[in-house]
Image (cartoon, rainbow, N blue to C red):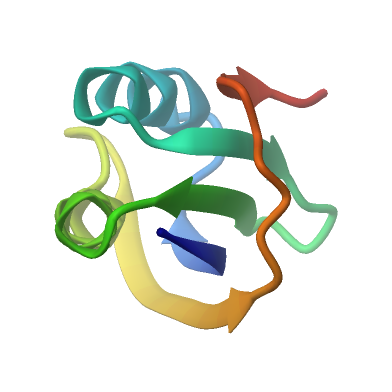
Length: 89
């Protein structure tokens, strides 16, 4: 298990990125949260097994149909032991 801090840049707000990402996270078993940032990016904290997070990162690099992902930054961080995946406002 590991914890990733993920920042997704591009046209990622107003395209159902958060809702779509929550559905993917729930399907994969990723725990954590997602929110819009004031600079137009999306910020995610995600926890799971390596292969689950690899699949999750693949999703983040594509996003939903109307998204145009330009860059995905990731960094490992300390485990928080999240219980589910939520959308923060």
